[in-house]
Image (cartoon, rainbow, N blue to C red; front, side, top):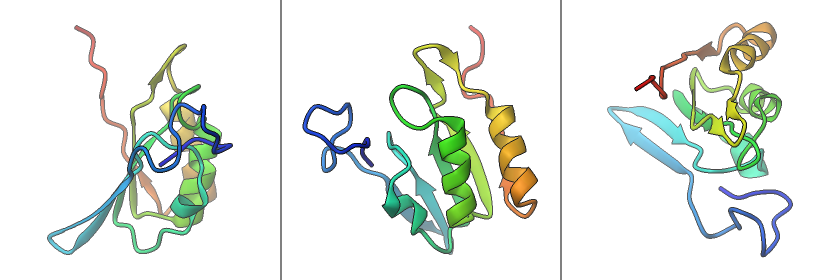
Length: 116
């Protein structure tokens, strides 16, 4: 996980943080970490569930996240970490983008930020 362009002064320089691939009960689960639309994410294969962040200016836009998800095609994707500087990212629009292009990818929206 890292920001692009990968520079020394980026919020998340390459090598500082991690994305994770876990295999649990025979299922491959991907957690993006605080990343942008990086080539390593687009090259993933065989992902059963993906947790993908989308919060500007720290990670990806919903458009970048949708484009990446459409490339690596997880079976299920959960938008998470979508609260940014200007509020919540439009995860409903993300879901519509993904489902319009590939109806086989299930987008599950969870309430990560319930009102207190």
